[in-house]
Length: 211
Image (cartoon, rainbow, N blue to C red):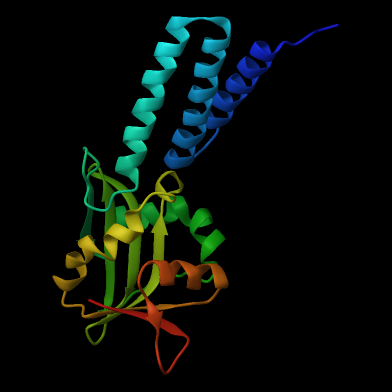
């Protein structure tokens, strides 16, 4: 029969946390859980008197804290490069991107259908130069009605949205857009829009953000 002392129990908990972190699709959640695991391993090292374990996990924890600080910043410091580019709605790349992620898109916006026509607009969201999300909508009059606001699961917990509707909003202004509109179809989405700075429109169920 196994007998656990306090040090072994902390070691097992630390190991479980590290394994769980590797199962996360979100970079933020991975780093947070791994940070807690590193702290647990540091405690384990202290309990058994192992300086190498303590030093290694102290360094790992510091790296996680540094990277998480960058994840939650909106001004792209410390090598976190956020960006957005207008892309043609009929672009083959855009078609492939939507088709590949359509199941995940429909989890959050089941009614989404790719907008078409002369007033359709699409903006590709970037992180470190790679696709990280997509905003699509229709803009017949200088107001962009957003049909899709989608971020890949790996970056869904970071501040990409807050950057886009804050410091990154120039991508919309450069396209001649003065107001962003989005329907608050669910309580979760209305909460998201409020956090992004949108306010309820006076005459409809839409939320608006003046640029």
